[in-house]
Image (tube, rainbow, N blue to C red; front, side, top):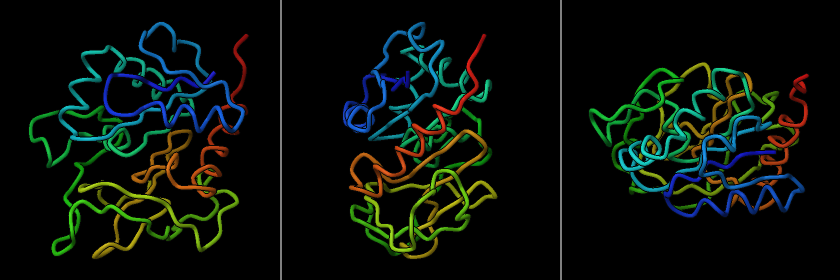
Length: 206
């Protein structure tokens, strides 16, 4: 079972529906106990970093997310859900993220229209990343955002938007996409299928 954390922010059902469409047993989860034995965890997010961080903590699902990250459960953060993996964001000074990844989410490069609302091409930095498996050099995905994490060794793909912008990271079983795979057509479905595969490959507890 893949748990899609439902903490009351935005349209979380679209991510769940995309996973179900691909054959996964994906469920929206509001009760922390319902995600205890999940084979994978998805943390979506839309809107503002501060509102999402506060809602996640109020729901108690922040503990589910941290537990999954600490145990090495396959984990996918999407858009603001991806940003929440970091220590914080310039969008909401003083509001802590989950802090699994170091650094603070930054503004998009100066001089560009904000938010970026468009399809943009992924520039693969680490083509052998599990998240990118099966994708080619002309893979386009859909972005809606005004902020993005900075550069790091975890970045596996960027896009060009007034400069190099982080599009996806991968650190072991933890994946994050600044774009919306559930809104990115066949490329996005391929990425979600890769995630389902990573969940299926997780060792079974005895």
